[in-house]
Amino acid sequence: MLSELNKLNQEIISCRKCERLVAWREEVARVKRKAYKDQEYWGKPVPGFGDSNARVLIVGLAPGAHGSNRTGRAFTGDASGGFLYPALYRAGFANQPSAESRNDGLILKDLYIAASARCVPPDNKPTPEELNNCQPYLERELEILKPKVIVCLGRIAFERVLKMYSIRNSKIKFAHGALYKLNPEHWLLCSYHPSQQNTLTGKLTVKMFDEIWTTAKELIQDE
Ligand code: SF4
Image (cartoon, rainbow, N blue to C red; front, side, top):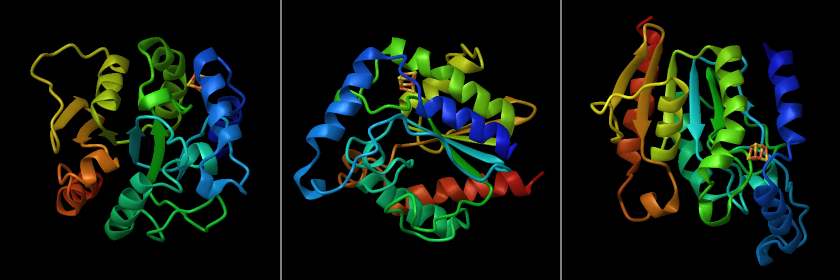
């Protein structure tokens, strides 16, 4: 499994399918944010990260311009990760609460992080075509990992997962904490995305987020 994921991640890193996103990720990496002007930005697609035996798969939106597009690892080096990793640590999915660089010693246990798009999009908005271009990578991660629980962070990730499973049921709606059985083997658990837009406004609180990871734990323990 590990070698299959490594092979897939090499493919992801060298992908240039979306012209607009290739130009944007490289532009952000060239211009940089003032605070990081002395750092070399990753500026490439951000591969999946985590435990190759994971039973829980996170599907996020896309890399942050000065977070994972800078550091090269999912949710690393920005405020979203600063909210996500402490929660994963409290739930026992991570060995430490902080995520600053690819070499910071962070190890995930029973959890893997993927995304709907692997390249940073302008205004955090990938187009439907870009999401379609990137979907095969997520499909392959699902094939390799066969996770029991998929946690989608935000509506775009939720809609992408429904599309992948060809689910068109108007009763299945995105809501924080909503839980659906995708098929006999897979659960889909919905959460608001831990972006600052949600966490600073109180739309997503620490307690609400902790409840997501407690539920994910219970679902894998119930096996
Ligand atoms: S978003 Fe996905 S498909 Fe598009 S260039 Fe990046 S890795 Fe490739």
